[in-house]
Length: 554
Image 1 (cartoon, rainbow, N blue to C red):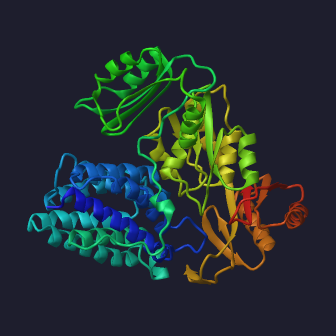
Image 2: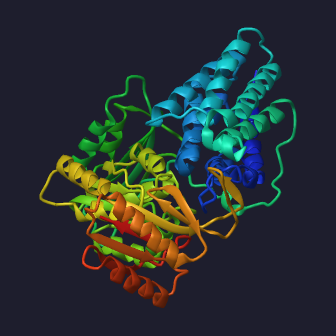
Image 3: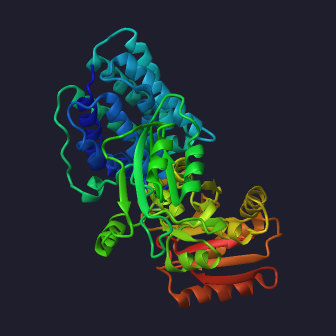
């Protein structure tokens, strides 16, 4: 049987191992574009659990360990690969719920639930990816659990099957076959499973090759929604507590609705097991009494009631500093906006368009679910639109929806131009549903071009690409390579405009931090002269990293 301490140490060792080998996984990515690569994202996702798990005692159950890990994975999830990994472990946590120790039968069921959770989260599952690898591992787990009750034999067979199927992914996807590599996400998963097995066999926890304190830094999984008072105090007592849900727990919305009647600054955040409450009220006893209808109080941390009128000012400042970025803003308006962007110009542009909070991030800096959650909580609105502006951030944003205290709509913006178009289409006089439809229609009409560089030598669709070569991406797909940045931008704009069947009328050139204003203005004048009256060419200094130009055609 696998004990809680074994599972704890196994996950910690897996986190260290994938961090040690993340570059190996990153290099399997087929596209040579600079990216928030798979190995890095998976490493940061699982690494978010290290500090939390290290605090668990040796007598912890596998249920407690898996739940704590799954919660930390979810909040630390970055990129699609990180989100899928977190969902796999969320399913495993469900399967191990209530288990003191875990047998092969328990893990076989848990892996199946992990597969279900991962597949359900992906709109169009593609075989030949991490999904295929985990599905095969789960199928083998059920087969072996029926034949053997030996934990080591069970996990050895699961790892072997995952690695065998991983090798087959090269033949499953044309792009992998052409590049002669296996799926990066699947590779990351096999590394994680194998590292866990090494601990289950009695091995020591892996040692970091390059210790990184950022991996060790932990945010308590329930310190997500605590606010302190400002200068105006309407209610005396700041009341905080955590409740473990009872069986057939009523809808948590009812608890929030009640607390709104007896106080303000109400924040109620829950997951499958726990409800976290923060409220400013003149009657903390009523808040505690109502909470008993939903479950029982947790002793660690104990409920906290503080008289805000007599709290020392320095103590307040210290608490606010400790929880910086996690202080939910009370709604002051109906609609608010969160956008992901990198670059001073782009951040300013989104702010000018009405975005309340800009999350710094993008292609090489995929923000975590936790980063996006913080931004949502900072937005003073009843309903928050989130614009990920990158296909690899959408899933992380969607996971944040489940953790927040307000209504959230994640728009499927896959690029900065799509995010800008969506914001321009917003009309505060319309409803959420009407705005969602109009903003989605607007973003779908925009074509996006990206001019960047090859991060490594590679071969894509029969074309050899050298590190440092200029890459032109048309709506997310590699279109051609060039040696001159401005030539690439012009050729790419011509292709995008022609692709719009001659209906395009506007081109916006957003130049990055590595392009001088003089060069960008020279390109704008050249393009305006070439396109004449047919297209109006506008220039914006985005200041973004990685991309020399982001081109919007509409």
